Image (tube, rainbow, N blue to C red; front, side, top):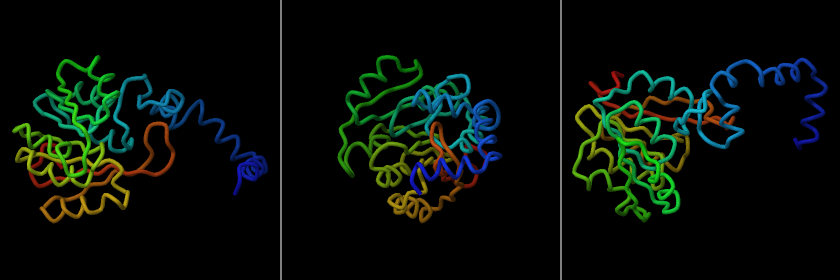
Length: 215
């Protein structure tokens, strides 16, 4: 159906049109700040505060489970860095885009470390958390080379650590998901919409018994 046909169909159903127009002033999308994210083309909440570009259902889940004694490693950086830095003790991020790295590192949170690493599939980028010789409570896979990042992440987790994979619905990430499950992780998916987008997405947590998120 083309755009003109869609408009005609909508006009032929005034009740539906009225309902859609009302969403700009009230309802779920207004409450969660979806419009702010859409208009600003950035991942922010209803108050304009930075949030990760993940599903809102995952954000609802994770907010009350983050603790100051936890450490986070994230593949990729941005508003997510600010969000996690507000809730945990330390955030370490690896970024492959030099221009984006320069922008973020200039104003990064005090309790965060930013690392630039050129991207090569199966190379130093995906192995960065392991090469640091540290263990992390939460590893966020939301950058590039995600299958290899998932595989490497298991070696940089604490005994109670979890892995978070964004866009877990994408078929190209299935080898990474299969690897995690084969290594004893269970998957808890959170589907729905994300800031500024209405297409169905999914963010998954991979965990074992006795994990730091009390799953």
